[in-house]
Length: 155
Image (cartoon, rainbow, N blue to C red; front, side, top):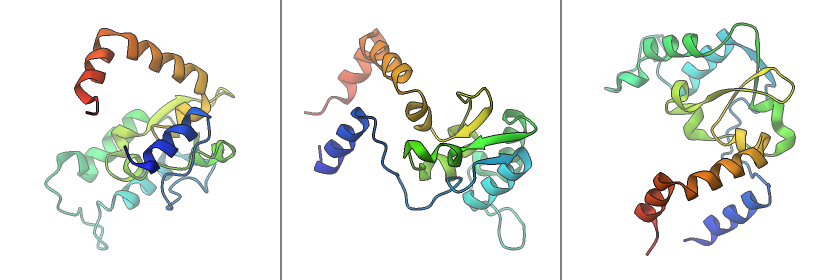
């Protein structure tokens, strides 16, 4: 394991979440509407050409129609908190979650104040570290978790 990975692991254990990428994605915007999230997602995924036509990718999951349909299905109407609402947690943003298949990778979750939040995969750990640590421990001790750990154990 590299020194960087060891350091990152230690930081996460101490609940210090370094930004994962330099591009801020939603980090500068605390709330957006469903339509704003869909528009920003299409831009960040780079699935549209400057002419507005779909960019050829060969990946059905990156087809603009698929992205729009899935986001419309998953996102509620009204204001939705984004990663920017949680800057105080220093969790940064995950480039992969925001740009590769965000309509599947991003998570719609309940924020502590009862509102809805559209955040990247690690933000739940930053918002609810104790709950996530308990869930991870249960997984590690489950038959599936033990199998997973065995499959990916470093030699």
